[in-house]
Image 1: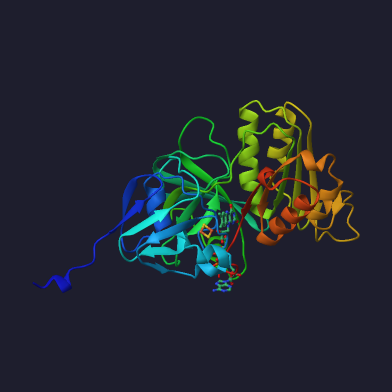
Image 2: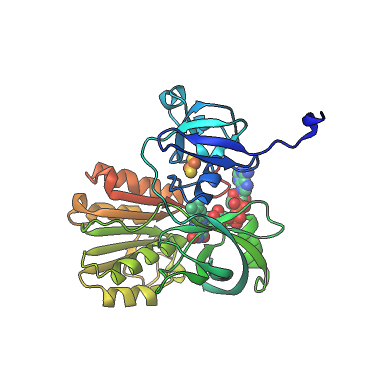
Length: 346
Ligand SMILES: Cc1cc2nc3c(=O)[nH]c(=O)nc-3n(C[C@H](O)[C@H](O)[C@H](O)COP(=O)(O)OP(=O)(O)OC[C@H]3O[C@@H](n4cnc5c(N)ncnc54)[C@H](O)[C@@H]3O)c2cc1C
Ligand code: FES
C-alpha cells in the first residue's frame, strides 16, 4: 500500500562483458557512477560532444541529457550505442563495452578552499586550491571545480606533476573567458578563502609509454597539462627529443617561460621551444614565429615519426589533429585534450 509514493531507488546496471554490476542513483549519469566505482570508463568532454564514453545498451531504459546523435554516427546509434556521460538510467540496465575496463583511481568529491590566485599573464591566473585530504592523480588529468552560486562544475587540468605521491594543494591555470560565469567571477573578485567542491581525477590525457619524439602543441592555458606531462616524462628519465609549440596572442601572454627554461635545461635530450604569437603588434621587436601555432606543424622534421600531445581551444586542437593526420602521423600517436566550455556544449 502507498508504494506509489515511494521515491524510486537506484537502478542496477549489469556490465555484460565484465560480469559485474553497479548501482546508479537516479540523479547520476552512468559515467559518474562508473568513475565513482573506480572503473576506467573512457571519457573526455563529459558534455556529449566527443563520443569517447559510448556504450552499447542491450536492455533497459535511459533518459538522455543531450541526444547521443550529436556525437555518434547513425550506424552506431542503430547498433544501440549511447553516451554514458549523458545517460541517466531509468530502469535496470544491461550494457556492453567495446573493450575490457581496467580499474583506476575512483573519482571522489573533496571539500576545498582557494588559498592563492596569482596572475601569470593578462588573461591567466594560477589558482591554488587546498583539499581536505590528499588526492592521487596522473599528470594530464583534470578536476571539476564547483563554486557556490555558479551553476554546474567547471573542469581544470592539473598544472603540475606531483613530486611525491598524493597532493593536498592543487594548481590550475585558468584563462579568462569573457562572459563566462566562473572565470568572470574569478577574475573580478577576491577569491581567496572561497570554499568549493572538487571532484577528481578525470580524463584520459596522459603520458604514453612510447619512445618516439614528442611533439607538444599548446594554446593559452592548454600549456598546463602539457607542462605536467613533460614534468612527469622528465622525472621518468625520458631521453626523447621534444618540440614544444606554444600559441599565445602576444609577448605579454607568454607565461611559464621560467618553468619551460628549467625543463629544457634539465631534459636529457634535444628540447626545442617554439612560441608562436597570433596577435603581436606588427612593428614590435619580436623576432620569433608569428601567426597560428598550427602553421608551424608542417616545418617539424620527421613529423610522421612523432607522438603528439595537443591541448587548448577546441578549434586549435581540431586543426592540429587534421594537419598531423594528413602528414602521416597515425591516430594512435595523437593524444588530445580540448578545453570545451559552455559555448561548445551542445
Ligand atoms: C577536460 C577539460 C579541461 C579543461 N581545463 C582547463 C584548464 O586547465 N584551464 C582553463 O583555462 N580552462 C580549462 N577548461 C575550460 C573550463 O572548464 C571552462 O569551460 C572555462 O574556464 C570557461 O568557464 P566559464 O564558467 O568562465 O565560462 P562558461 O560559463 O562556460 O561560458 C563560456 C562561454 O560560453 C558562453 N556561453 C555560456 N552559456 C552558453 C550557451 N548556453 N550557449 C552559447 N554560449 C554560451 C559565455 O558567454 C562564454 O563566452 C577545460 C575544459 C575541459 C572540458
Ligand atoms: S565524455 Fe561523453 S561524449 Fe565526451
